[in-house]
Image (tube, rainbow, N blue to C red; front, side, top):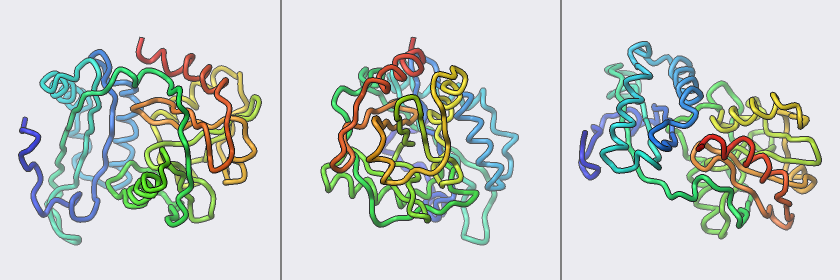
Length: 271
């Protein structure tokens, strides 16, 4: 356990040098890691894809206990945000110790993180970056440059978030979230083949929605024109669950079905 203002990484850390790291941002509520199963499944899958050595030595039970212990120490055991980052180790581009390292951080969250936002997000579109659509696109990796630049663009343009195109000029995701569109009883979200991050809340919500048969669920292509044709839009991530989008460019969206989905599938996670 280290003080937050004490350096924790060496200059040769490969995550710092090359973005050679994976991370999971987890929500801790009443001493429980929300959607823990989904987080660790994604983490292990990513570590295997990147051919990290010693993956079998990473104990979900031990890491979970460390996360919760840190939350207790930082007084955010009841409402916390924990970030777990795993690095390949220290070294140059072609030479590395292959000594797997990890870092856990924990911060408090406001109680409003269990309610749906009343003031809808104003969403824009980042015109510069293009996400690739390859086997690494779905990872939650430390290679975050397109999202960083998009977040700065959104802030400069007084937007709450903005969407990012893939290499085919179609929508992949937002800076820290996946995107869902609703029209009557149809819900569509960009498929993993479109280059979006394989979001934990995205996966959970798709599982829940498909199980109810209340909506027609599509994972596929989403364009900026679709954003203007659909009735409702919301964003998902592991920390805030769902955020309702009020406006994209000049298009205004409704909130009714988004609110019902939040109440049925997200609010129950914190009860």
